[in-house]
Length: 72
Image (cartoon, rainbow, N blue to C red; front, side):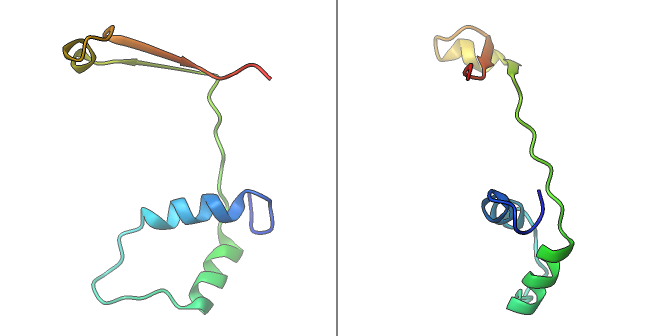
């Protein structure tokens, strides 16, 4: 996705929230405009996710969780 794509702004906000800024540094509107212009975001939509974790068992769940995307 790039600036102007329908889902770009939402994805950009998520990406921006993970950036650790140096103390005292603030992003100006000009900086945000330049970053958006050069930013490319790849959207990955998995069909299936399998997670194995012993902590699940402590919660009364199966240790392996399988999540599948809804069929459209």
